[in-house]
Amino acid sequence: MLTVDIWRGDEEDGAFQTYEVPQMESQTVLDVVTYIQRKLDPSLSYRFSCRVGMCGSCAMTVNGKPRWTCRSHVDSVVENGRIQVAPLRNMPIIKDLATDMSVFFDKWQKSKSQFVPTDGDASEFAVVDPNSKERKAASAGIECIGCGVCYAACDVVEWNPDYLGPAALNRAWTLVNDSRDGDADGHLRAVATDAGCHACHSHQSCARNCPTSLNPTASIAGLKRKVFAAALKGRL
Amino acid sequence: MKLRVRDGRLEVWLFIVQRLTAMVLGPLVIVHLATMIYAIQGGLSAVEIMGRTQGSLVWGLVYGLFVTAAAFHGAIGLRQIAREALQWRGMTVNVAASTFCLGILCLGYQAVGALV
Image 1: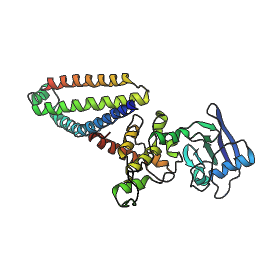
Image 2: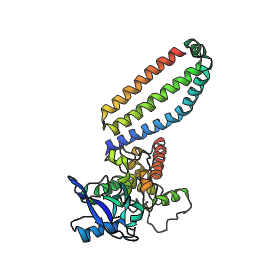
Image 3: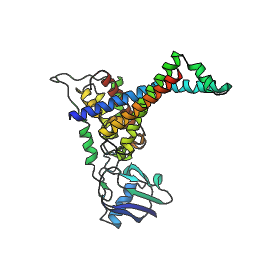
Image 4: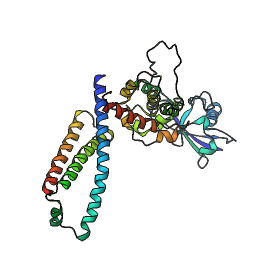
């Protein structure tokens, strides 16, 4: 049997509750949570969707580290027959393991991380050299699926709740390097704020915990360099 | 929005100044430590130090630059620590950091002036 400590409660109040779950071969942490909800305590709230590491909905804090529970085998995280599962850090808890991620996604809006089309009638295809330095930089950060693991792992977000966070800044970096985007300086202005890229301490918790092995710290360092250059050229 | 952009610009320029002063401080600290290790070989006395530095424009420039870089670098760093660790924000933290910077500049230049 597996001993599982699950966080029960909301933003105001809560505590860990312990359950005993049969251990099985190739069992994931999401399987464990699902077993508890279906067999032991139907009042347990949690969030998941695809179950195969595509959507990022099932991210939770497992033994103190943010991870996708569907891609976390029990064998790889269990310590002395015990697992602790808690909601993601740095986001308000709605109930039990489900967090309110709107604060995370609002930061994407604040960082103005929308693609800005260039002027023109788009009568011709944009030619993007896949081997150009800019495209390689953009491609290195493009696979983010917005699961919030990096945001939960970031200590700077904990200290400064206004900080845009690794995912939003990583998105800005991909746009700044996208030759089809028409407002690179606008993206830089949006992140060159009090709570923008300069707030990052390069702890690299985001890179260490990113389930898709992205490196938002490197993207943020790139933004710092670009903002540096833009400021010296008077473009900010 | 204007305020936010202005605030952002301040942060960007402080970041730039801190990085540039770090680049200046790096070699100067090495020169300072190497000189200290060399200078104390035959014993350390004020007379010996003053004998070497008095009238030296080079040492005056080196330590003058050192003081300038350290004053700005330290003040910007302390401002950031105050903002993050103490949640001390707004104009008062800028005034405090500027005062610290000016204080280090005054004390430092006074010391450099006495040395050369």
